[in-house]
Length: 207
Figure (cartoon, rainbow, N blue to C red):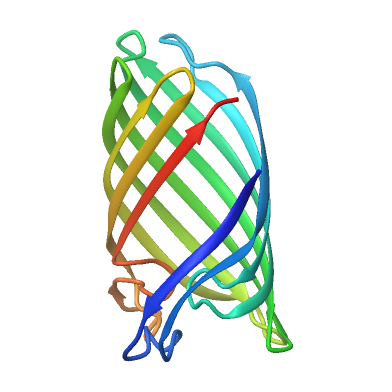
């Protein structure tokens, strides 16, 4: 279970004809719940397999900061392989996400597929590695047909620490390439749904 809040600080020219104006705000947005089931633990001899399901409600658009009523449903297959007695880990997430959002009387639907992979080297309580993710999204505006929205690829560094109670994880992933929404056939960077550089810090405590 988690509570969500968003901090927005932007101004200037429209971002790829999608995000306009300026905003400086911090708002509580909503709540999410997830459930994970391990199907097969990872060892040096076999792949680890797990399933994760998530449901999320947001009252704030995570990119623009505008008020919305949004639901997200996500399913994920997690595949993991260990080597060198667990000191080297290869992790893969295969994700399918469905979203619906209502704003200004109009509703939009979106479906996203995402593949995330990474290699981590473990040393006692620390791990460091490389990660990347690629996603592809199609959407259906209110009253229109399904259409391509964007694709992008981010890759970068991951570092973390874990003990019996606490765990921290920091990732820093620049956007390498993506589709420019001003011309869906143009390759550049997609900045309407993903940042130039994605930085994330997660701190967890086990009860």
